[in-house]
Length: 464
Image 1 (tube, rainbow, N blue to C red):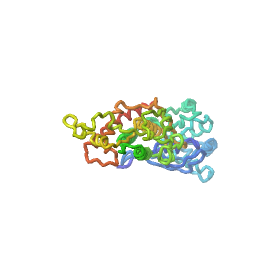
Image 2: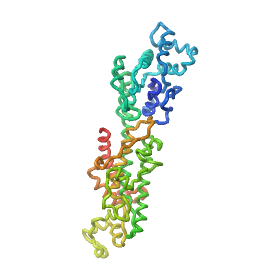
Image 3: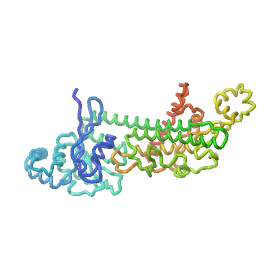
Image 4: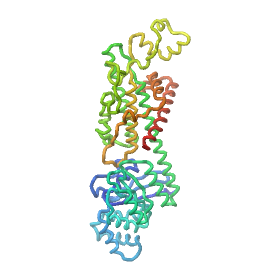
């Protein structure tokens, strides 16, 4: 069976975001070169979006058209007879006579050799005669054209004016897209417009759309699972200290360090999942530096940044973000009863909280992350996830993250129940190898429940 290749030529005026568009569609920030100057792309470069082993979509980046007015005059002047295709072919046959138009000739060849044309428009630019001439040159190729209105969320964007102008040129199948502020729904619209214009490739494009939807959904679920795993493990993380201020301080530092490691690991995994690098993160806005949040999770400034006020719930000597005896809090079993053994109905209680009870009897304390810290940890991950979902792979600026204030933090209804359950099972921490598969299944059940809740919350946030 011959492989079905569907090829796209991405063309447009210089510096309108052609390479940016391709990077975002490919999820590849390394494709081509982008810069805030004209003429960055100097040759035709292609990349592939694979549908399956027998069909794929190939996208070709092309140099920018810099002097379309002169180019159109030369094309029309060189061949006064024949249709547009004949004029382009005639001009290309005499390319040796136009060494100064070597870049433009690469574009003309791409127009004729591909199935469809994406014409990328920077809607921040005024509508000038050169753009009309570019569209006329494109029309000579007799190929379907999809105008892509880029940078629609940028200051100065005039989408309406461009839509009106394109309609006057009988180009109604345009799509709005922003390679900086990304929306997955906009990407799907591009493929759907291709279906309209390439009826004979409708099934191939339908399969591509379904594949991209599946990939996006799988990526979202994987990201939400990482965050859910982080919350469960952070809640399960605990240290046993002697009942004195010095011991509590030492083990508080160890607890904080361990939770920082967990968050740093999750950050690295999320960036890799969405195919971003540390360099894509704004050190001040996010704020993250060298794989860590610059605003430390356990600092009082961090709580204030999220609109959370430190209260008397923080235990003196334990440090911000650490709570003492949260696991065994509220237990009323006396030391005398424990010394003699717990019988009957209390036996199950003793079995479940055996370590905690023994620690009480022996004068030890358990340290774990307090509720406010876990609440802020949740908000930070949700904010990061939304930022990564909405970032195009061609953005020249860093990921910018608006901190979620406490009155905006959405906690699932079963939040408290999940945390209490995790605190009862320190073996759920990934570094603790549990020998009880049943407990691992229970852990995964809570991770899955948090994932479902996070899916609902992130969808609602993305729609705001």
